[in-house]
Length: 618
Image (cartoon, rainbow, N blue to C red; front, side, top):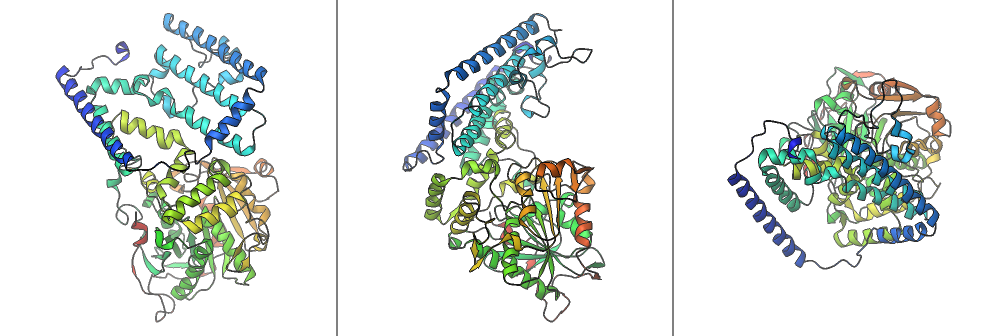
């Protein structure tokens, strides 16, 4: 191993190593003692397996061994794969110039050992797999074999559980998801003795990286979460969420921000944004260079933003309809009072889009025509195929969750954050374990990860209603399936123009599920698909010149048919949306300053500068 370290490394003084190891031992002992003290004051949960993972894997084992022929074939395939790896490893050890199967021959054909099955081929290094970016994973025969054997084994295990017949859809989903979590956790990149980068850092620093990492671990254990970024590097209203504006209205559930204009003329029809209350609104106003709010204001829109409160037990009884009545409907009244304009265009992001659709259906029944168009960012209303989040939602888990929420009055934001992080565990969990605890590095300041760590709570009644009626029972798409404030909801009565933007690699709101909105809404519809995921696909300013998007003016029932007929365009989708929205925004009028609306004697007064108090509650 030592021979593989870069030449010229100055080995630390043995006394320094001893001192470092002693400090590590003392801190580890203190951490364990503190943990035991904390545990002694807790009682065992009545639900030792709230996710019902054990039940799903028990069913898996029963079904797996009911087909011994398939089990034997899997073992045989794995053994053949290992034989190929041993042959390759031997050649690499004794013939350093030998090309591994990952390299192509000069004539473009794959090397001879690529006769392996498609399963064993998956062990090849994937582009973009950040776990194995260090050159030693390729150049060092030992680490190369370690990586390849892990990938082969992981693929075989994952394939074996996916190929088992006889499992219920619910159990199959859990087995697949938690098997992947288990395999990701066991990656050799996550451990000191099997990661060349960590070994190199430990040798160079005399173990000080491990001491620093232990201090990071202790700090994170006290906070109850992994630190993903330098949180001291950001301050709301100072270097993040800095778009100029004012809070012009507030109630117990939200504040309404009106942003200051940057153009002399603006479109007459205001633009209101409904963000999700699972997260805070400033994902749309991170920094000036990637702020959707700033960009929209520059296009001539008068932008209003709902900033949801971070609820505590006092709002435990608030339900989904309270969020509608005291959220967008209250905001519409405030916007009219602030500007003298009744009609608005509205954007809903994720859960905010689900609320927007519900509100539009409610308003249709009430003959309320104030919303003239709806833009839906990565929004689901049909939860039949809700993606990997369905792993966490079934009747048994709902009962456990509802009991937990009833005891506190809310769902803690950190628990919700952990759920979302598990969907991308390698990027949002294990990469930080390696960086923070094993390499001992301080996380890099990153605005997006600061926002991601700034979690919010969920009122018990609202969250239970949302999960049960939408994720669990999918009632929102049933005409009359959901009743809000005494009004049966029918999405088919939404007849305003709708613009739907989804993301191709979205794990939270899968794009084919969001495409179902085209079937449930009536009226003019446009669906656009962005590259990347739930956040990066949406927060993609034109100046960044990143990713691409697909446009197809037709909306056939089949999403695959839509994609086949779509044309890919480079860069951000924002300008395309702006052209669509501007046609629905009326004529130009003099720019509006918060607190100085069209009817100055009636305009709402400024309460405080943006971003307001509510968003600062952690």
